[in-house]
Image (tube, rainbow, N blue to C red; front, side, top):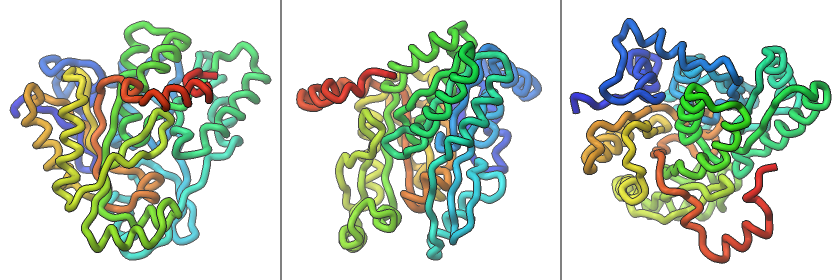
Amino acid sequence: MSKAKKIESTDASVTGAASAAPACGLGASDAPSQEEQSHTCEMLANKTCTLIFDSCADFAPSVAERLGIEVIHFPYVVDGKEYLDDLWQSQTPHEFYEKMRKGAQVSTSAVSPGRYYEVFSKAYERGIPAIYFGLTAGLSSSISCAEQAAEMVRSEHPDFELYVMDNLLPSATAELFAIEAVRQLNNGLSAAELYEWAKDARYFIQGYFTLDNFDALAAGGRIPPAAAQIGGKLDVKPELSYDLNGSLTLRGVCRGRRKALKAILAEFRENYSHDTSLPVAIVTADAEKDGDWLEAAARKEPGCEDLVVIRSSISPVIGSHTGPGMVGFGFWAKDRREKMSITDRIARKVRGSGKEK
């Protein structure tokens, strides 16, 4: 494991985050020295296009800054008081999830069109094209607010090249997408070309995760409270993923935490692209030991000992709906569209959801 690279998520892990350069397109043998790292990461901030993501991409601290992208901070509410997801600058993941464990009432709300209008208007002032890759509509209505705001800005500035795309990728899978999007810009793609690239690329990232319990899902009305109680008594842990529209899907249920983690590992084994120049992401909600186990197990897979692993924490916005103890694994993989059933293909064609507006 001497070549293994990890990008950590905690405040004390700035040294780990400095490995962001190899995760952004450099090979294992091309990692810069500590003196060169800051300069290298600054070079990743492309000046030909403004890339905008949101905090639900669960960026490891400093990674977004080093990539040179803009992040829209989503709001969340704890016991009636609203906060902005500041990528763990004002509190630690443990502090937030301890509040949930102790019964704090948490919720989220969509970003307003006015906020998006402000962000897109500032992007126009930079004099270069802009692309917003937003949290999937399968989990939030915010992307529709972004589209409304984009139309307003375009009507005021017809010459402004502004794109809005549902990234179809929740949590740290969007972080992996952001890293590669920056690399593609640096390789010479224009904003329009990157937008076309993204239409396909977003389907080549897969993510799987499990929860410690169903309490947060029940509290948010996503499953009946009785189902959560039964799941807790039987020690049932779900294996979850997301479909082509970005909505949560249940892959299966497992008796016990370790079996659920092994199910996630099996998905990695079956679907991983085996391109170690691209990083993988392990994300947790105050469950670092389980993240450590998953990372160690993944490195034991053939050809994976030198994986570049980004470790980050589930944001308060997503964590409000999943609760403490979530563990997820994202990676570049086989085309998710290939897994569609015949009936799903027909339904997708009827809905026209395969076409980007």
